[in-house]
Length: 255
Ligand SMILES: C[S@@+](CC[C@H](N)C(=O)[O-])C[C@H]1O[C@@H](n2cnc3c(N)ncnc32)[C@H](O)[C@@H]1O
Image (cartoon, rainbow, N blue to C red; front, top):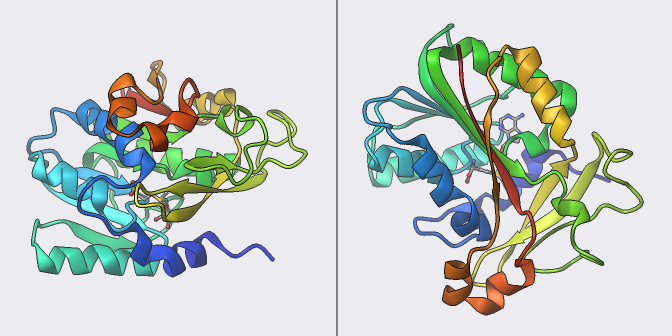
């Protein structure tokens, strides 16, 4: 039986705690996204699907103003709060669902970030969450998110069980697999594997969700991958993913 996403994260919360880069995507995605968020000084930020707070803490260290972190998993939020009491940065965390942001008024954030959240949501839930994000963003505010590259799950031959990152697609194809749940794993550099999921969506699905949410300008897009610098650091770890489209990052503005 498939366990709920909340339970998956509640049970694995300890393994997600990190102060330094350790997970594959701490190298291949988050540094790029943090750069893309600049300038952040003084901004009111919402981190949706914040987990144990790694990205929010990094934004705060770079000068962000008020940061609210929201996550479905009470255990992940508890870890984030515990880190906040160890080293107070002034970040507020709460348990919540990205599709229902009732606790926040219209036009109250300058920046909304979602780092690997939408791969847990169906197309309908994604569209609903993006409508909420559009509502809570101020005009001129930015929305930045990353997801597994829509073609990644299909890009590794016999990828099942292969470190350091894979999803199991079974018989599903790029189009027939829409809204289907692919289980997978992403590895830390110390060899620990973390369970992750991808509710599959095509590239066009992301565009239509954004459009229906009210984001009328074309987003900027970046396809993130292993770079020669990463390879030089640790060829054994990054080598199996060379030349694969790993993640897709989107950045756009509310008109
Ligand atoms: C891959 S983790 C990423 C955590 C964090 N953004 C980071 O970069 O370290 C995905 C997170 O999304 C959260 N999540 C999944 N579905 C959610 C939903 N509907 N609403 C809010 N958070 C959700 C999970 O609990 C988990 O903490």
